[in-house]
Length: 354
Image 1: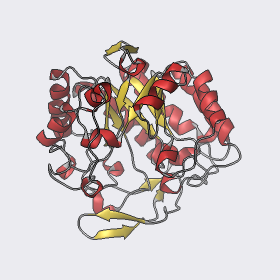
Image 2: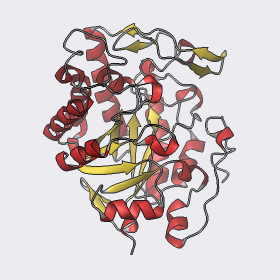
Image 3: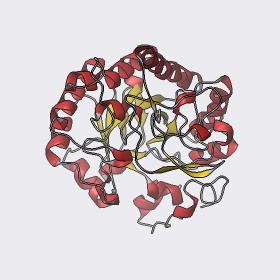
């Protein structure tokens, strides 16, 4: 049997195969609430060994995109319970990805009283979609105060507890792709001179404190983290200390005892390739499971698993238009192409009608 379809363990979970459905923003959460349509979408893909949800905000301040869900209110917890019940009824396992968007945000997308916060005041380049006013430039965020940082860490921990109440099997902390945790890691967005910026030790501090808080809340074996070394999405940029920064981060996350690290490599989509040396450093140094991601097909997935480059493989876009992706890959059935025009539009078209 192909190693991709062989069972494995993730903490205390038994996974039926090593295929992971990658987190993908789909913007179907009207009023930031999970709904029946989303429950159907995820349940249709429960053949994956593990589903990781779209980015879900732990805070009103982190709802930067239109129609993304949260996990900070009782109504959101109830909505997610519909999703987890549907996935578990289909014999699936599901982690929620906690994603605070930080400066990748616009006030038009936020609820009343929420604020655009980031490590420093630099706005991201480019524009962001708002349902009310169309494309708008990214605003200049407010630099987070010490109390803002303390509050944000607590929000992640509360969202992790809410995830357990909602029936999730665990949480993934989104430390990649230029969102809040990554904004602290990266010198393109972090110009702080206090204990949260400057040195490698200071820049990893927010990621580590969030991981510690969530592990204390629900147990480290239910917490993973996604990272994107050398990533350039959302105006991130590598610096001379990037290798040592991720080495320090991995050491600290080992001390917390996280169940997995999920490494983003978007070179298949035109981004710069993640250097092999840093992937090998993370693989050799991290004690938990390693989730590979980035443009995988069956042959490459099996080759990298056989070579022990990782333990599980995440597939993203193929799952959008192939809810039965596991079966199709196992049986050699051609894949249905996805309609990019419906990736982020409301409703079932391009979502549950494949």
